[in-house]
Length: 267
Image (tube, rainbow, N blue to C red; front, top):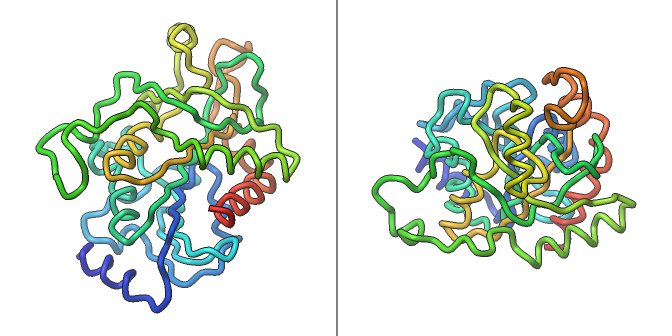
């Protein structure tokens, strides 16, 4: 039972995960940096969705990172895997249930902003839900949050300041912008990218927004960071592939690990 696992996590002597991290495509290497206390496959969490996408291991790692207790969701689930928005946000709600106060949501995305390059990191300062159903549709659970949560400042300003400082300390040119989520699994069309650009989106992907909505609803402080894994469709005269996303993540791994570890340490 999931409730049993929550009680088990809470019972670990001296362990209180102040921060949870959702690890996006190809970014699971951060888990190698943690001092592991426990590793729980998603399949062992009753009723929990299991990752099926490439480069998503699908495991909850409880440990220490930067001398802080953390819950690392090594791999996420997506709408395109056939899960509902409510299932997709179960890691967020589990993080809240085990005591987390902050969540760092990461992803690999396509760069729309023409000043971005493959391998850049983008600090998310706002988002656009592009035809994505809200995870809050249906009867509201008042124990989680209000019926109509405010979304005027989703991504916490103090956490963004910490991220900027960590980027400077690790010689990372951290961009900043608006992230848009589509469902996938197909990559976006050139016309869709033009439409998103006209709406003010700087990067696009297939995750994150539904999770951020759920996190805001239940009172978590949110930091969002995108790896620009490729340039969005139509910006280059070549097809997009999932392999280039994973390669970009592998190449960016050392900087990603250093930045996230410092952020966690200083929260």
